[in-house]
Image (cartoon, rainbow, N blue to C red; front, top):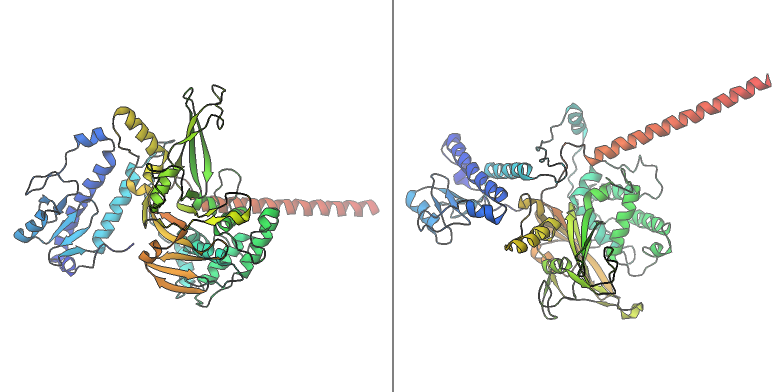
Length: 556
């Protein structure tokens, strides 16, 4: 993420370390107060009992207080009272209690300092660990422990060779394979997939599986991060994907065959299934493979019978969310007219808005009769990486000639808060309406629900003669990938593009407390399977030796 402001020489030139330590302690108290206020006062009743600070000049209650770091003065920013206090008192700095940003009077700007940034991030992490509980166990989050290399890790690092690699490399078009290239670039920009394959969790040289897509992913990351800047041709990935798809049935075999136009989203789902099938830790239930630990979420569905009031609730796994650009609901609840511009948030609100089912569409299991019902979707468990697909291609009939592309632009943000679309928030909202309060609340700090955009797959042109490109984020820089051409871009260009798929990564990853990481569980399970295979081979060898001995004894 980008720094909130320039580096400040005035903070660095404070009179001695003691003065800076005093200021850091004051800064810590202010940020801690703000985090406690946000996380403890969740309901409206509690918020009314929590006193709010007031401006030291005009006495107005402050929802966003600015606090002087040299004294106890608290003031408002919009009216300039905190600025006037700094000018009249000669104090140099104040802090925005909501964001932790520091304003320097000498620089006349919000400034950046690494020491204060470290304190803010540490307090934010501690707040997440303190105020986040798990519903089943009611346990708080396990305290964060930084990685400290042991002697084995140190020895491995000493022998390693650093490569001047940026991980940015174009992919050759192998004949209408822009759909494949764009999805592979989004995989390469995915921080969870990148960390998994670059940390040797799957080694293609040691793998014995045939047509292994995980091996192809490992080769792809090795090539992209090899330091070679020339475009790379993913021929092996394409052929492996085609063979794996062919074994899945005739419908899947058409995905990568020939030179016809293919759909990027269909390839994305197919690739996830193939990676899952060949990854370590892959199981049919409670899977801990890299695909499920990255993309897997849970979708909650509630159907309420209007005749008897019975609610039938189900939960289903969710790898991505497909959103309608042109919905059935017009006017309110995220709907819009034909002339209005769509947004990702409006599409999500329409996706989670109750839908009325006809009498012939639902049979209530309680009253046993066909009746009108309302169906509502919500996200029960958010995945680490959210994938959205905008339904730009419509097929009104089975005739392919009737298909059309929806050209409407969909605006999407660089940061996304998913709290209002979760099952818990919707449940609290419904309870609030019953109790006379309309404000939705949710458990834990807001950072649990925040996502950052890292990749966008775009479709340009018509449905029959289109082309896929991709935007990805590398640290704070954005790049556009058009097959083998890689160009430096901007966030503004990315947000102005005609998005077909958007990928967001969670700003703060969740983890279960006091359990082994999934990759360690998968590695131990593989080691156990390997031991069992070795024992089985040994038993077979011993049985063959006994048979040979018995034949020799019989001949004597």
